[in-house]
Length: 509
Ligand code: PHE
Image: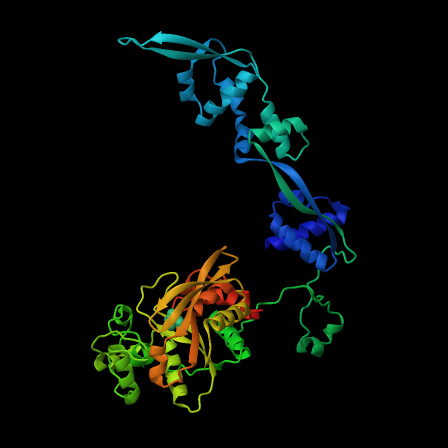
C-alpha cells in the first residue's frame, strides 16, 4: 500500500479507539512512517474535517553523532576504565594500541576527574644515550564504575526528562544539542469516519446521465491552494530598461534618431568627429572592419573636403593635426564603434537646414568593439546617447542636464572627472555613487563637441552641442543585480534568470 494511504488508515483506526494522538512524531516513529508523510496526511484529513489537528512546537534535547556512539559502546571514560587490567598496571603505550583513538584521547580526563584511574610516571634512561624518557603506567583506583553518561544519553534518546545540570554537562561535551521539534496532536473531527470516501473532484456527463451526482460527495474548493505558474512571455531586462530610458528622454523633450545602420564608413564614425586617422581606436585591434563591401564611395564631397582641411591644416581657430589625410582611410567600412556616428550624421543634416532649428536628440542602439570578452565586456553592446544643439549652450547646461537625466534613472549623486575625447572639449567622465556597492562607479562619458567637428558641417558659429553617452548594459546590471554581462546579453543568456527575475515580470518602478 502507498505509505500515505497506510498512514491515513493507521491514524483513523487509532482515533476510533483513542481520544487523541498526543504527538504525531511519536506516532509516526512507533508505526514506522516518515513524519513528512504523516504531516501531509494530517493536512488532507483536516481539509475534509475528518480529524482536527493542533500544532505543537517544542525544543528538545537530541543526541549528536558522538552522543549516539556512546549509547551502545558506553562513555569513553568507562571504555577507558574497562580497558585497564583489574589488578596491576598497564603501559600507556599499550593502552593506546587497545583503544579507539577518540576514546584514548577523551577517556582519561573524565576518568581521572572521577578518581577511577591513576597514572604513574617513571623516568628511564635510554640505553646507549644520555637522554631519559618518561614512561607512564595506568592502573585502576576503584573496582567498579557506573556509566552515568551512557544512562543519561539513553534517557534523553527516549525523550525522558533529565536533570538540567546533567544536560548542561553533556551539552558542554557536545554529546547533546537542542533541536526544535514540530508535530501535531490529533483528535476526531466533525466529519470523522474510519474509512474516508474518495471525494469527487469533477462533475461529469456520466454522473448526470446516471443520476449518481445526487449522492456524490464533492471535494471542497481549496481557495488557498497555489496555482501552477503560468507560461507567459518575459521582457528581456535590456528591453525593459531601454523603454524606461526612452521615456525619460521623451519626457525631457528629446527626439529619437534613426540608428538602423550597424555598418558605417570610417568617415562618419571617425573623420567627421575630428578623430585623426592614426588614432589607435581606428586599428583593427579595436574596430571590426567590413570585408564586403569594404568601402563606401558615396560621401558628401563638399563636406568631405572641409573635414580633410580641418584634419590637415585646421581652420576655425585650430591648427589641425598637420598630417596627410587619406580618403581611402575614410572610405573603409566598419561596424560602428559608437552611436556618436549617428549623432554626427544628424548634426550634419541639421546644419543643412536654414534657418537653424535647435534640437534635442537621443538614440539607444547597438555598437561593436573588438574587445576581449569578460564579465563586464562584450564585443557588442548597446549605447545610450543624448545631445542638445542650440545657440549659447554652456558646460553649465551640460552639468544640469546630466543631473536631471541621471536622477530620473535613480542616480542622483554624480561626480565628474576631466577626460579626453578627440571630438569633445571639455570632456568629462560621469561617476555615480552606488549605494549597493558603496562606491563611485563610472556611468558615462560626456562633453561639448569641438568647433573642428561642428563648423565644417556648416552650423552657425554661436551654436554649441553638449552630448553624453553611456552603455545600456551597465545601469541594467545595477538595477537587476546581475554581475556577469553574459547573463544579460549574447548567446549564453540563461532564460531561467529572466523568467525568475521578478522585474522581468512586473516591470520597473
Ligand atoms: N562616444 C563616446 C563613447 O563611445 C560617448 C560620448 C558621446 C562622449 C558623446 C562624449 C559625447 O564612449
